[in-house]
Image (cartoon, rainbow, N blue to C red; front, side):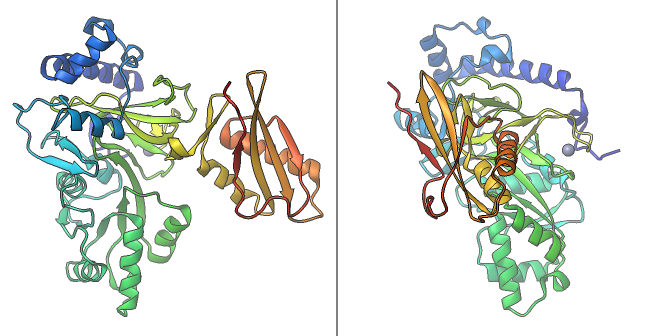
Length: 418
Ligand SMILES: [Zn+2]
């Protein structure tokens, strides 16, 4: 039987959805009492709170991006009317922008579910290499580690040389921070004459704030025997999702509502489709409903073998602004990169045009090896493209070698919106 953080992680999904709906309704009622911004949003929409009864109704509220939050806070400092200054706020964090974030509550479970799922707990000594200065990261990860019983070394953004010394002197068993910083700490250790695997006790690492490329994960796990976990969140809304031991998707935390929406409309996309991750954190202090992260993801609804019943986010596919939309579906750069990796011997380019108000997706293929069987390549490429992007290619063209240059754009969008 897997070791859950608490009972809520294994309740039936319907029960979870019911609870989350009630929490949203409660937070809305409270927001209408306490937040001038929420009252204004309702007034502007001509909305009465009785009109929101379900999570689908809830999607009438606007998505608020980080840029929008910066603007709103600048106009109505410090919290854009989203928080009541009379509340007992224990901390105010500052993110670049600036964005001022009243910290939600000392009693929150911030990041604890993630650390627990990664097997961190009592007896662990964890180096917390997230910044403690102004931003939420250091202190909130610290609180999560303490909540699962681990001892924390608040090493923050100290130099890699100092981190090496702390890891060694204090026999640290785990690391939390960005993957790139862990790699530079390991490199520094080698530079100082250590053998990281032999001389250090770091056996687990929990990463956030940066993607973990599969090649780097592989390096940590194989070369240094470090079990790695990814965590996902945003400074405005705290922890959002985390990896379990299966490492196939990120379980959505019980304290947040995650929606995957079409950024153009703010409405949910069908299950399994790519869209923007929009998060609401249940709380009674900061009424930031529907925070638009700008990140692209999709939801995995199938049950996870670990036994947790929550839906999972299928990692992050990139930023909304970097993706292109074809027939209403996103194609993210990360998806194209995966196809590129699978077809190393082929250069390709996407051409998007529009005829009779319909998007036409043409893929140009340029095999770099002359002996390639065109029909079989076309079939394999189309299939992988469909599996990866959930989109069917309308036309496939074969180009002569040398037509697509190394630094040519991967996607050419020739659509004219007239
Ligand atoms: Zn799982």
